[in-house]
Amino acid sequence: ISPDGKWGFVVGEQMREVLALDLTTNQIVAPLVTTFQDVHGPIVHPLQRKLYLPQPLRSGMYVMTYDQMGVLGNPTTVDLVQGINPAQPGNLWPYKIVFSPDAAKYFVACRNSNEVRVFNALNDSLIQVVQVVDFPVEMAVSAATGHLLVACQEDTTFVSGSATMRGSVAVINLQSGQLLRSLYTGFQPGAVG
Image (tube, rainbow, N blue to C red; front, side, top):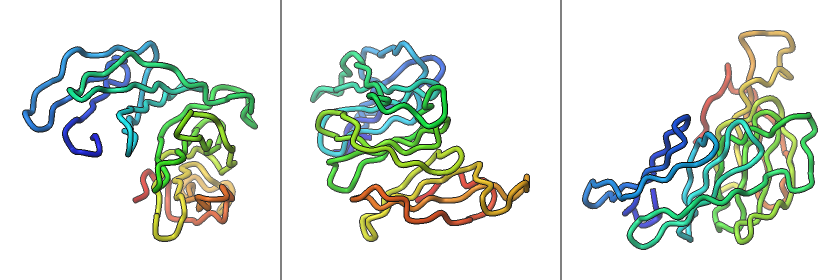
C-alpha cells in the first residue's frame, strides 16, 4: 500500500504479474505489468513512488515506479550481489524487504545465503552484508530500540539435531549492521512484528 493509502499493489508470484489497485474507488488500474521472473513480498518505498519486488529464487529484485494515477512503469532489475558473493554458493533467494525508519536504507532477507543485505535507498547500492543463521524470512524494524528483528526458521544452534526446536530471531543494530544476538523463540518463527 502506498504511503498515502491511495494505491495498493497485488503480486501474482508465479504468474509474474503485478496489479495496481485504486483503493479510493476499488478499481483496477490498467495495465497489468508482467515481470520476467517470479516475484514475492512487494514493498512500497515510504517516501518515493517506487515498488520493490524480490525475485525469490534468484539474486535480484525488480524496482518499479508508479505515477500519480497509480500506473506502474516497466520493471528494472537490481543485482543484489553487487560484487560481494554469498558465503554459500548459489542464488541469494531474497524473500523480504524492509526500510529503516528514515527510509535511507533497506534490508533484504536472503534465505539461501543466510544473510541480510543492506542497501542505500537512494541508489540501490550495496552497503553491507550481515551473516545470520539458517533461512531468514520475515523482518520487522523497531524504531524505539533501533533494532532489526529477523525470523530465521531453520536455526539449530540452540538445540542441535532437534527436529522440533528449530528457529530463532536475530537482533541486528540498524545503524551499525552488527548482529547483536539470536533469541530462541519457539519452533520455526514465520513472522515478527
